[in-house]
Image (cartoon, rainbow, N blue to C red; front, side, top):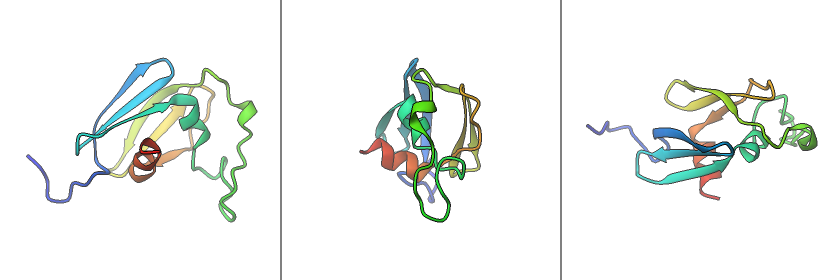
Length: 104
């Protein structure tokens, strides 16, 4: 059953392809694949991005090359919260951001 408020930003399923690749299948059938470290480096939280300027303040060389999601939890119907293997856990990834990153 399709709900009338579903959009291309709604997730159908999420899976780990391998140790470095995460995939999201969207409700419209589009599949996004993400390198896990690249996704970690795109964290939009205030510890990673200056809230006033939008400038990235995360020091990329401090993020391990083998970083991966430890857990992924939904935040309502609009985002995922990813707890990373490097201990970072404050990032909330809105579906729109994930879709945009997946279409790059």
